[in-house]
Length: 475
Image (cartoon, rainbow, N blue to C red; front, side, top):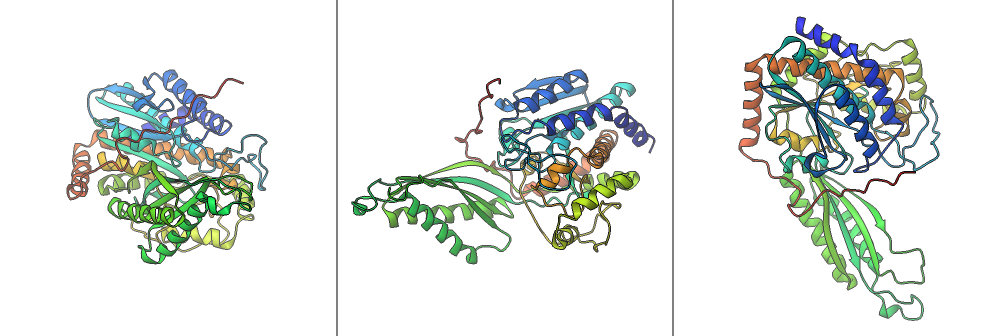
């Protein structure tokens, strides 16, 4: 308890600087692999706090790692800072009001995610320095979580080979230890090539790539009846071939996200979708080129680490929201449906509470709700390092992920309180592992047992490289 109190004090001592970092990142939203300004802000903070910095980690210009301490175990605290397209939004209001510009916004709270993770790592660094204890803490600044699978590329490059334990968190509406459920996910492009022609004068000479895309989509939709109920397949038109209906479209591209509960299930679905694409090409006398953009694994849990993190949540208690926080959250809830709010409770398996705009409890560790599962590249880290993740309340209960409402709440006082709370949970858990050799051993044994039957194989083919983006030109 004494160590916990000390590490929490160290978090509080620097909360102002890191709340400021979070707000700056909110104000410069950058999507996958374009996070040049955001990584520069994190790099500058690492240097100011005295970390040893490695830039362009794993050959990714928007990834960074900072290390502090000497000897002992290596504890990694993972952060993110990428934004999303189409979620630009003015802060601290309760109505949709996009900010003029490129339309990007932090609609998943990653501005807080990276800032709180770096705050936690800084607190652990300061604790090690003050006590002279052996051990190393690392902050990993990880870009492109939203569809870019940067951590999977980083794992493949060996960036976590000497790490003992990995810790992270994610902004949420309810505070809990993450259940460690995620879907393996592949993003794959299907580029059909046909033959252009005059759609009226010579339609018989044309071979429509757009027809091939449409037939592929129909085929995949029919396949949905014959795949596992917890698998997911989505698609987006990347290139429809043009806007002139009197031209037979010679080129069209569709991107698919194919998800399943584990890697084996995902790989099997991938092959079925590929067969449908080839069938569509055959029907339309076009050709198809298939390329994988990114892929991530399914998440592995770690019971000893989850138990340790849950104890910190219990000792800390709920995020200390005040009346003003609850008032703003209630305004946000007024923009949501009853189903939005009930879904959050069903997801974690606790009874819904009326008139509760912000979470004032810790979800019991043994609580199990309805699986409503997404994907994350944290999963690939969890296959090579024992990993644990917290969910900490930063926004109104019921707020949908990837929404303007999350963007609007991203700089609110409630968000600041939640991110500082998360930093305390992560820093305390890191310190537990450093101080308790038995906990470390149990965590590693748990991990070894989970991967023994199915050793990790990176889901990204060896020839696929990160889809790096150039540094934007200075304005």
